[in-house]
Image (cartoon, rainbow, N blue to C red; front, side):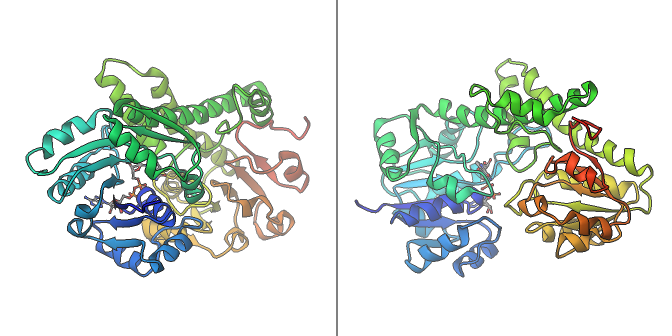
Length: 437
Ligand SMILES: NC(=O)c1ccc[n+]([C@@H]2O[C@H](COP(=O)([O-])OP(=O)(O)OC[C@H]3O[C@@H](n4cnc5c(N)ncnc54)[C@H](O)[C@@H]3O)[C@@H](O)[C@H]2O)c1
């Protein structure tokens, strides 16, 4: 094997994980970011966000000098045959993807190309964007380059594992040379290969994310109907999900999806479809159901607590999902904002994301070091993120700690009967209201 020299532009979740995994396979990887603080911290082996297993992987490859962190395109791009673009593509206010970071990164890359370079876009981008990028850089790029699309499917919380064991590797290129180069780079990783054109590759990413978001909103709609019918959504969805054609993954009701990908990719795909004359009503409903799901949850809170003014409530789970500290588009932020609007006193706990919430809400939220302290004197436990540690709380101890034994379970982590038998008032999402099944 001949190790390759590659550059990763953008050291966020996707870029850093991708870079560290390639370095671990023996390649020399330059990781470039415009944020000097981030690069300084990474040079010391400190990963500026929480992702299981990542810091150890980064440190190991840093010591071996296979992973190099820099703010300079000039020192990395000319040495690299493949440059991966992994910068953010956040939503604009109208839902379209904001491509400012992408264009900046590609323009800067173009200035430093030396020899044939494959500019491979890992960021989630609108279909056909490389045509505009090509047009933009053709005057600057003095050397031969090609664009490729290699969308990323890792999940925060299991990003390292996902990047090492992907279900599939999608490689969208215009030439066999480019496809062979990427196939070679990825040869040590498992997973189906999907080699195709760029437009298909880019579309796969949107279809995957929006389909998963659709499953979540479908489950939330089913939960609402189940409550009205007196059926239990957990039983109904597992009964349906045992069918292999359906599958239970992502068919869980809750407080709605969040994070940096699903919300933005759903609205971006609606826009992309709109631009080619397709009114994507299905996805518009997915988005509406998701927006409303926090209200569904909040109504359960007010149903049991009536007026919230001056009442102490506890929010358990602040990250948008377990095993990450990411609070981008987290349902917790929306719930906390609503609670504050109504004058509630908020006590909160999260194993990883507490500092981000502290920075965002300052004294508005009292953060605790463990769930039991956060529940002391509280009139309601609100479960927003299904961290494993909440599943085995000592609920007898919790009941004595709280001033009123009310649990509103936004992730259905508890068995309603068990919790009610301990003397709690319990409400989940789409569960049968009484104890009897
Ligand atoms: N986070 C995920 O789970 C995930 C999964 C799959 C795909 N994606 C997609 O991958 C892309 C990146 O997502 P992320 O979550 O890693 O983003 P992120 O916000 O965590 O990281 C982006 C990084 O790019 C850097 N950056 C911005 N402009 C730059 C420039 N011109 N030069 C160098 N660095 C620059 C930023 O400083 C930041 O560190 C997005 O398009 C996203 O939709 C994300």
